[in-house]
Picture 1: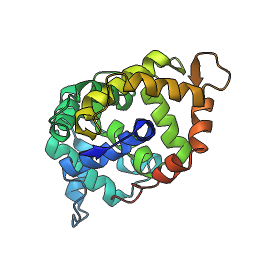
Picture 2 (picture 1 turned 90 degrees about the horizontal axis):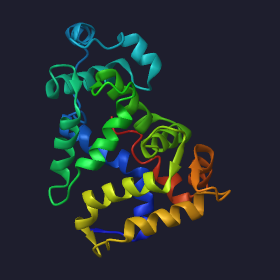
Picture 3 (picture 1 turned 90 degrees about the vertical axis):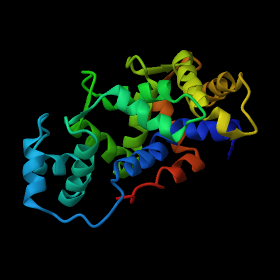
Picture 4 (picture 1 turned 180 degrees about the vertical axis):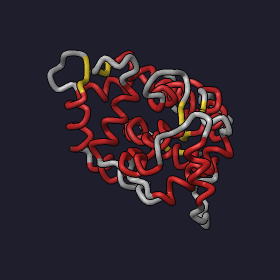
Length: 232
């Protein structure tokens, strides 16, 4: 049972991506150690059906070492032999962590954030690039990624409607597991708090600059941003 108040939900709105992705890593078996570097792994990485970028290029584009990329790829290919993850896979993973809630809507939003080219699938490159930001990125990069998640229609602004959709999705996923049980109006209350803090010019939308500025001035959020940087 998770104790949570309105302020706690506000933090989860920004950080739940990182927390849950640690769980996804565990699901894929990617937090295990002891894998040896091998030529076979590297050849398989280059020959995957949905061929990712070369290993050296992925090293330069992410903050993962060659060995870490091999570990990530081995876990990825074991779970996804085709070389891609579809939205149903995301939903299945998150439903296992929240069996008493409905994680499907949140998984949909998260999948769209990873599906950067909007082709309906997440490749190994998509997965690794996103994971690099969530686990090893700067605070600015993590907040940019979070903003993109909440900007559902990708127009460069977060509206109250978009934030409410995200809050309802988080409530559906986690609300039944909290104490005290969150009331039905809690997501809308959170949205109002969110906009009071972040919509500095009161124009009814939150820009990325407003979002980042507010988060960077929140000590709790900043402290939490560094919790999962060394999970691999």
